[in-house]
Length: 262
Image (cartoon, rainbow, N blue to C red; front, side, top):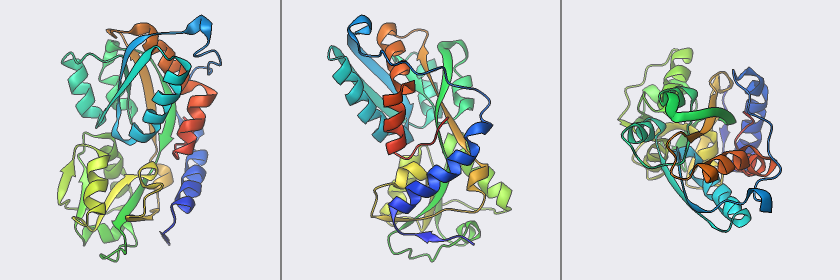
């Protein structure tokens, strides 16, 4: 039976346990982390533009701060949106150096534009409801009877939501289909919806929503790949940033934000 979790600390522990069970299922392995990123021998400079899934915004802002502290001549800029939206922009020529996707499918859509993608994190879904849970949501089944918002199916969180609901045999007529997970959470927190499916990492530290870990969440895991881009304006900084994300320091920051191992 699902439990309504009202404390984000409990969610962080639950998420870590779920992701720990599934980390070994990934089809690819990240390269060994680098311990030399930011040293004098590997110092880089210039502007660095990173396109990353919306669910990575908090973690990558902090990683960007740590990276620029190690490389003070770099100016970091993060652009966050749904992975499919970012892929469209990149294929149309957006000048980015690095792409980090919330799923492997969207990274594959870049084909040769992505250089040696590596997995760096994983995530699972939870049900988010407004504080006080006015819709009385307790299970995935309840989403069919309340105002529910979901990510669009082409977005990683939408594909994962569809898989989770399908596995549970639940059909939801969503009130809206959003282009990124941040938009889903925003509507739920504002009380514009009774519930939404978001990533476990999105609700950590929030007091305007409550969270339910649904049955089957451990069977639908998103694995996140990252890659420097073949047409990166700053290829040296792009390669160094990818190495930093894969390093012990980068992985520690991601873990602090609730992400699981690749």
